[in-house]
Amino acid sequence: MGNIILGVGELGATNNSADCVKTFALGSCVAVILMCPKTHTVGMVHVALPESKINPDKVKTRPGYFADTGISALLKKMTTFGCDPSGRGFIVKLAGGARIMDPNNTFNIGKRNALAVKKTLWKYSLGAVAEDLGETYSRTVTVSVATGETLITSPGRKDWKI
Image (cartoon, rainbow, N blue to C red; front, top):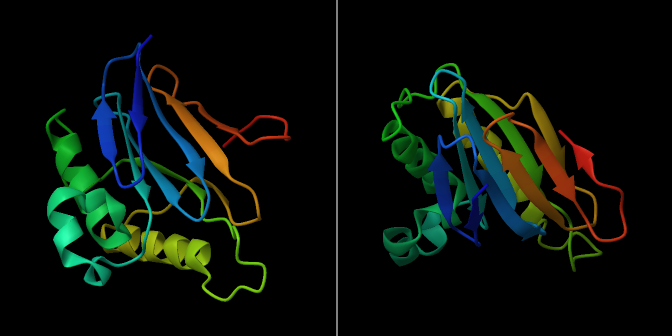
């Protein structure tokens, strides 16, 4: 079994049933998981910030860094596996968007990321069937291509699935 490991702002997709797609330490970042049942493809993007206008130059090298560019880049990547570019028929799951190191909700980056992700998904008429967003703890997300099982782990907590 292979792992496709995604860092902050990275995206990836695979239809190899032996693979898992994984990202570590989602604090205020949001993992957007797209699953295409038709082609048995799983894709994920590790979104760090809501809008690319913050840093347009970064979009050129890492479009997955932002919600408004990362989801479209992931959909484009998934077309290389025969998936519909509109995302029609996809299963969507979301995780992350925590309030980390912001006890007074001054910046609300996690919440802003989650809202920007949902807004972008709505443009494609997509919505999450499962989500684990908010709270004050980081998450690691692992998705099995073979089963679509989405496992979330967090230090000091029992593992759970969405």
